[in-house]
Image (cartoon, rainbow, N blue to C red; front, side, top):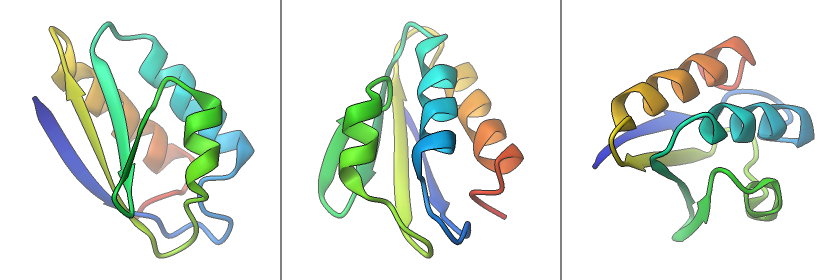
Length: 88
């Protein structure tokens, strides 16, 4: 299992548009991908799960991936986070 921590800098946090893009990025991989925030873990392939966390600006989140393509999954998700201006 690989994991990575991210600090959310976007004013709106992880709202609908970036959440959708993160779900789409995670869904391209066979690995199980989990988003953790304030002691809650959700499947990053579930838009409802991601939105239910209500991740706002200045939040610290952890994304974990476990499976055959876990490193590639984390790289793609990190790239999406950066491209969407969610992290610095």
